[in-house]
Image (cartoon, rainbow, N blue to C red; front, side, top):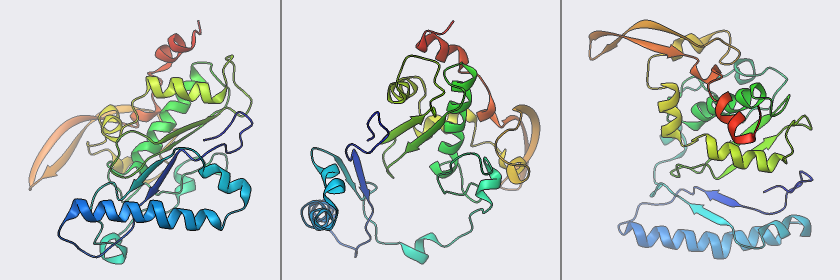
Length: 246
């Protein structure tokens, strides 16, 4: 968590996914792994840190250890595959920050892709609603946990409402459902729409609908789908109402 001076104030959530050998009694072993991380690993790490950073661990924090359950298959065996490159060209060029995850090669269940679209949508609507002239929205997730573990807003001093960036973030959390399932549903990310993102970037495009042909098990199907739905300014009225902007 960050204070109003934009400096770290405390650790809110720690997420650790650690690979292990297979075992029979899943619940007992997962509890032991989490206890070892909490009682052995984290204290050892904290001892190596400067006092200023070690203080961030004081107080209660949320600890997720292997939140999806057993983690036996990993490394190249579990993760070898193709993901996209050119992540900066796909997004904001040199202007904006990027979370580091590529889009292409991943389906919409991966927040690298779907949540990046969602925060683009949030930021664009915040600016269009007159809440700030410029805004960065960051969201963080723990694997296996639906709701974000963190949401950060930075208006770079351009805010037009009498609220701190942290208070703006609280209202954003209230208005926008940032669970992966809700994002996929809101933007229709299960539809065959991603071919259009292969060139000319994922952002700064116009949303539009058209009929597309696609195949399932060799059968040709058609449906109307919406492309680049995350570019729509469809939350402006809701934001103005929440922030009291006329």
